[in-house]
Amino acid sequence: MLESALILTVLTAVAAVLVLHPRLQRSSAWKAMVTPLSSIMGSGFLVCAPLLADNVGYDAVLAMGGLLLIAFAVGGAVRYNIRYVEPMLATQSGPKALGRLENGGRWVLSAAYVISISYYLQLLAAFVLHMTGVDDALIAKLVTTGVLVAITVIGSTWGLDALESVERYAIGLNLGTISAFLLGLAWFNIAEVHEGIWAIPDVPPNLNAHSGRVVLGLLIVVQGFETSRYLGDGHPPEERIATMRWAQLLSAAIYITFLSLMTVLFERHMGGGVTVIVDVAGRIAPVLPVAVVVAAVGSQFSAAVADTAGAGGLVQEVSGGRLDGSRAYLVLGALTIALTWLTDVMQVISIASRAFALFYAIQCAVGAVAATHASHKPRAAWFALLSLVCLAVVVLGIPSE
Image (cartoon, rainbow, N blue to C red; front, side, top):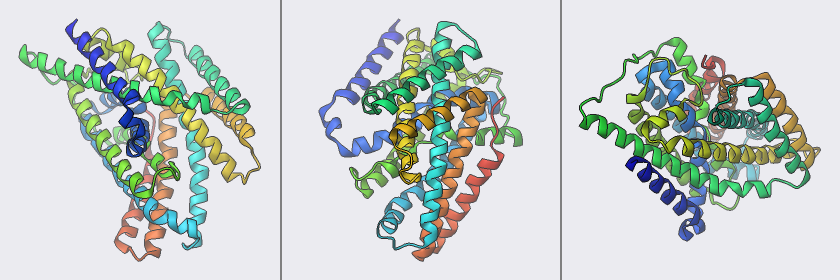
C-alpha cells in the first residue's frame, strides 16, 4: 500500500499548491500558461496511450512525437499571428484577405468547439459508466445528453460564470493526478527492473499507411495551445507567446515521458477503448483508478463548459450580434446534442481532430499572408507548407476502430 500512500500524497500536494498557492494565483504568467497546458493535457492524457498502443504498438512514442512536432510547428504560426497579425487587424493595416481568413477561422473554430464539447462529454460519460461497471452505449448517450441539457439551460438562463469557476479546481486536480500517475509509472518500472522482470511487451510496431492515418485522426490529443491566441487583453502579446511555448514544451515532455513509461504495460490488442487507462492505472496502485476517473470527470466537464462559453462568444461575434448569448447557447446545445447521437467516442475524436486541423490550416494561411505582406518570405513559405500539412490531416485523418 506504500504506492497508494505516496501517490495520494503527491496528488494532494500538487493539486493544493496549484489551487491554493497565493503566488501562483497572483501570477499573470502562470494563469496564461495553465490555460493552454490544461487544455492540451486534459483529454489527451486519458486516451493517447490505449489508442496509440492499439494502432502503432511500441511505435507509440514515435507517433506521439510526430503529433507534437506538428502541433509545435503550428503553434509557431499562432505565435507569429499574436505578434504580427493582431496589430494588423487592430489597425486595419493588413491586406483584406487577412480579415476574411480570420473571420472564416472563427466560424471553423466555433464548429470545432461544438465537436469538442460533444467529445469531452462523451468521454466523461464513458469514464463514469466504466467506474460503475455499466457498458451501454444508449445510457452513455443519455448521460452525455443530460449534462449537455444542464449546461445549455444554465448558460442560456443565467450564463456560465458560476460553472467556469470549477475550472480552477479541475485544473489542479487534473495536473495533480498526472503528476501522481507519472510517479506511479516510474515506481512500477523501477520495481520491474529491480525484480529482473522488466521487458518490452510483445506489441510489435505497426506504423504503416493505415495506422498513420489513424494517428493523424488523433491530433485532438495535442490540441489546446491555440487558446493563448484568445486570452484577451488581460495578458500582453509577449506573455501569451512565451507561455504558449512553455505550455507546449512542458506538455510534450509529459507526453513523451508518460508513453515511454507506459510501454512496459502495453498489451496486444488493448482494445483501444477510451477508458482502458483506468484498468492500467489499477495495475500501478489500487487508489489510482479512482483518482483518474475523478480527474477525468472534472477536467472533461470543465473543458466542456469552457468551450461552450468560448463558442457562445464566437457565435455572437460571427453572427454580427444577431444571436445574443441566450440564443447562442441554445443553438450550440442543439447542435452538440445532435452530434452526440450521430457519433460515438472514436468517431468524434477523429472529427474533432480534423475540425481543429482545418482551423490550424487557416491560422497558418493567415500567417503566410501576413508574412508575405511583411516581406518575411521564408516564413511565408513555411506557413504555407504547414497549412498544406494541416489540410492533409483534414483529408487523411480517420477514426480508430
